[in-house]
Image (cartoon, rainbow over all chains, first blue to last red; front, side):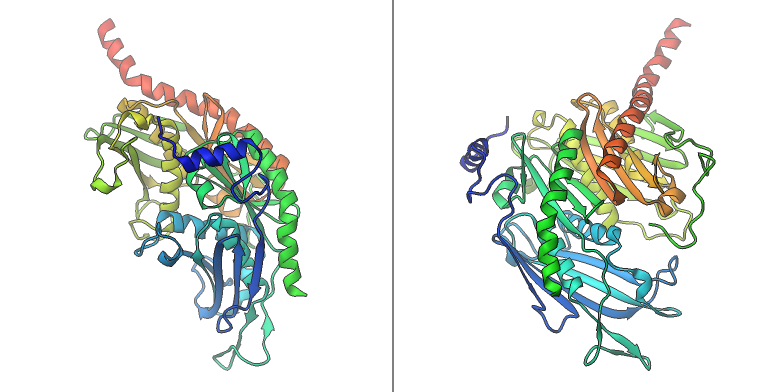
Length: 260
Length: 246
């Protein structure tokens, strides 16, 4: 038998009463704010807070070489770092499986959405743009998947596009913006004691039995990732897809407002 | 994902290798292939060739990784440098294999009765010798047989398989060329006894009803895969029985 702690019992008791530690409903997000161009030196950047979770995404666009199997396409490279400053549970050293999973799930959504046309990142033969998205975790309080995707998408949506002129990269002055397609957002769910909640915080993540992230645009599911050892039934997955299509409207609106 | 020089993947309702949309590749599983391991299985799934081995339960080391309530699973999925048709690839862990190792470990954390071995460690190795698409699913299917053959107690023998989409057509168990040009890929692992989903990944584009239809196709294919798993587990004992009859 697993020994339960006071915190876990408390969270379970609250869920049984349809509420959570911060008084939220089971399918509510915490307050979200987005600050774009937080790092003016980067081509694009955005800091997202989701409750006490704080992440910063930065974008650099540099000249690189195409992959041998895609000679006419630029490269999209997404990384995520769980900085030791963000939590006492994060340690220095090579990226943990958790950090790698986070970066690959963020990458998968953006890539599958076609938000970035990698063919448009072609410069000339043997020369393409490498677009680096780096997601930095500054404070961890759960749900890095949604906060990280939102930060990356907000940074992409407000990203400058350097020019390649006379064998030189022009980053200053009269340059255009990166062309982006329909934005992708993700909704992450946690299951605790057979109840499903949206946007888990760190206490809830500690006691969840399973997790599901669904990335979507207006009409289609673009990426999914189940995590942790617990299970979901097909019915639960279908209901989470419905909730995602509904809740993602709020997130897309936040991203949409950035451009205006 | 789809490229510009995309080949026609379904012609007259049939796929490039002659399969129907909902048809699995041929699957063969053999147990006991690694004598040193406590349990092992070799799977040929189409052109995929994968070996899975189990060591333990043993004391978890270093000591700080021990869980006083249950055993931990260490899982390593790796592709050999000669496994693909492309150039020689670097061996050792990369981001893809690290993620696959993690989600595979999580599948087995669900079904292995870890509480029976407090402070213990179970090592699970999945080595892809030749790859042709769908290696994580084939690896999980083989690892489930390896674990069952080791006698480590489990609540179920999970299986895994992937559903893909080409145009508007869902197709079962994509091979490499289909995977390269498909519109979606959704690998899933299921515990057949409960029908619960232990692994779910997806990328590309699917509607909600395609996700549901894909999950149903996977459940149906699971009956075939589970049967092959059980027969592989029984085969060595049936050989012994034969000998007694003679």
